Amino acid sequence: MLLQLPSGAEFYLDGLVLETILLNLRAADLANVCLTCRALSQPAQAAARGAAQLLLTRLQTTRMREMERGSAIAQLLSWESVVGDNLVWLQAVEEAATIIVKDGQQYVQSAADLTGSGHGATMHLKPPVFRPNVLNGCAAFEFDGTCVLKTRPFAQPLPQPITLIVVAKARGDTTIIDALGTSSSRFELCHGYPTGWHPSPEICITASGHDASPKHSLRGATRGTGEWHIYTAVFDTKRSEIYVDGFCEATGNKSVGSNLLDGLSIGCDHNGIFFLIGCVAELRLFRRNLSTAHRVQIEASLARRYGLAYSMARELPSPTRQASRFTCVLRNMRAAAASADAL
Image 1 (cartoon, rainbow, N blue to C red):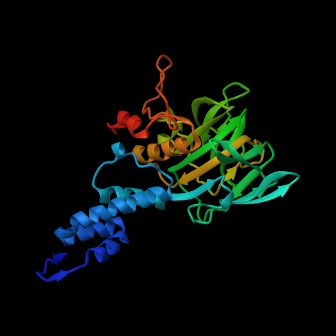
Image 2: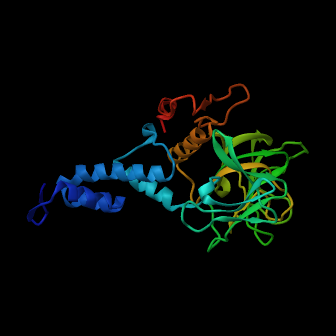
Image 3: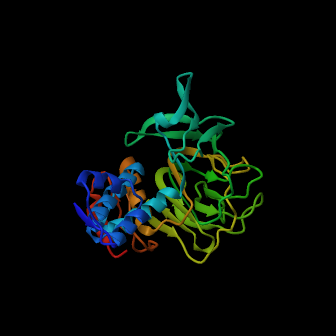
């Protein structure tokens, strides 16, 4: 390829060498290449498409082209930001867990952080059970009401916004995720804090208070009945949201509190009182409020992996009209995504 620089200098560059160079550049560098040499704009965009696909493969996320906006370089830049803000990623897979066998049961001693950030989780009090092939051929960590996994403390407590995505099932008045320990401030995803007692309370998120019941919280509609769900909790003070299987169940101008997050307790609240009865298959934490396009593509890919029903409804379902759902195992995700083309 003959290239001419703004200075007027010309030189030839082998196509294979050029491709190798471009594939190793980040989005910002590829943008600079386009500005510097117009002849390289098309190869740079092609390199960005390839690099974005590698990032999505790393995130185990299927691209939904109907949700993409902007150039290939812009798309790469956005996904680089998502990967950079993915602070914790735990998944119930044997190769990422330390498992011991006792009395015929497999117990989880620790689970590695797939982001490489070093925020893996280790057992506390009692290890959860590793259950292979419980959800569409995938494994899960089983919590019996006495088991806890705790991550390493974060180097600095995280301010909001924070997005938690958890594939789990829970039964009763129970905590799925909370902050790290008894000295922590509450940062909880749970089925609990009802206005009146119920055997299976609605899903709730709160980042308010410490020991006493929280003054601020956000509640959805899904109850803790022991069914598998994809829970997405967006902690963003007065802009917080709850999504369950893609449905937006709670949003609006209602604060969940402004606490920071110092680490994660999985399977118990930070005070060690309310334990999870259920399972967790996967957990991802992002130091940001994900865009709708990023959230939907990650959630839909999780639904496909675990064989769960999923909706891309953008509004709260009304009592008289329920938004439609689709099952990723049975339907084509691209066709379902067409309904979200207006994003």
